Length: 170
Image (cartoon, rainbow, N blue to C red; front, side, top):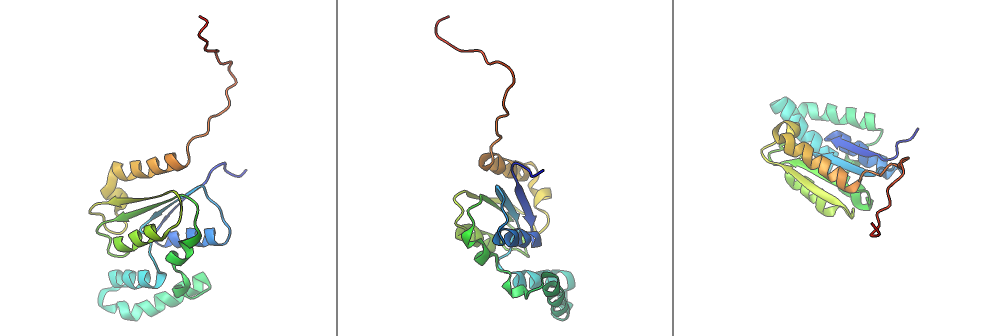
């Protein structure tokens, strides 16, 4: 059975999976993108620098080749700014102000360039990459919930009980 409503949540690389899904005809009622990147090549370079420091230059080539093989196309073709140009689905962009891999400025650029009629930006002050939920706490979860409840309101279930008629005749 297909769900009545579908919200997709992606963080980091999985934001690209959602973008590809939408680009190939997939549908959703809302999407939440946490720490999205503009282009995958830049994201991989930052990730390699974080993981391997001085050896990042050597390992980056291996990482890029592996990712291209997994994707079955070159990593430079994975550009979220380009892929999001036709989105009409409601989108929540979530970013940490201290993210060192998916920069806040890039997330803001994606937010500004996205033509979706319903979109929002949730910033988590002081959060680095991968720490948004921990640092943001209740405000993080409440921000996501508020967005989803706004763009995907609950549908009233049909009532099987008789409703009392309210009249002024009483």
